[in-house]
Each structure stands twice: as structure tokens, then as C-alpha cells.
Length: 179
Image (cartoon, rainbow, N blue to C red):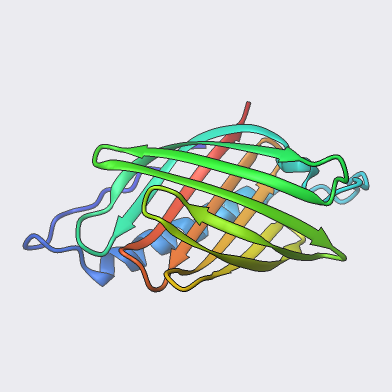
């Protein structure tokens, strides 16, 4: 699956309309990844099991002070011995810089808790969230960051969308493949 988003410069500024278009395209990617869902799925010991391993892919990242950029990312997910805690690292590069996200997430009865940190721009906060039928919904809250993150997993495809509400970043949308 591949998606191409063309961003045009409008008198040197990035408009809210382009953000809305990019968000709509990201939503379409989530819907596309959600089908086909298998009716009978094996019960796994951990809701994190489908994530375990290395992933790579592409996407877009948006900044408040400049035009959005194409981004290439690699993610690694490791499960602890207790199988209820996930360690996540996402490393991304753009023509203008990099993003690195590190998080530890614990799951108890479908609820998520943990800590999230973007190490290059130095944003961090606590995370809470839920296991969803198609993946995970996470809310990140810290003194210097507030964001919503959705992860949708379907077999060897993963879509990640992060929407920042109080930082120099607007958001990031990724489509990754396992392996």
C-alpha cells in the first residue's frame, strides 16, 4: 500500500486547509488498513503481540512554523517478560531533521498507562489510553506536550497518527510494514 500526498505552498505559509486534507487522507489510510478483518482471530497472551518486532515506513510530519515534510521511520517494539509491558522506539528522518520517540506502555484489563518522550525536541509526558479492536488509542499529557496517538495494526501493516495540541509540531502520520 502506498499513498502520495502533494503539499503546495500557498504564499509561503502552511494553511489549515492542507492540515484538514492531510488528516482526511490519514483517516482513509486507517480505514483501508482495517479491512479485511478476520472474524476468528486467535487469542493472544498480550494485546501488544501483533506489534512485536521491527517496522519501517513513510509518512508526513507537520510543523507550525514550516511546511510539512515527508518522513521515513523505523519502529521497534519489544515485549517484557511479563507480557503486559511494551517498549517502543520510533526513529524518523526528514530532509530538515529527525524525530525520536521512546515510550514504555503497560496494559491492564484493556487500559494503557506509561511514559512517552520525544528525545530530539525534548517533549515528554505520561500516557494513558485503551486497547481498541483495531489497535490502540493513547493520550499523552505533560507540561510541554499534549497529544493524541492512534495505532492501527492489521497483519503486517501499521498506521500511526499523532496529533499534537501544544507544541511546535502539528502532527505525524505514518504507514509502516513489519519486517
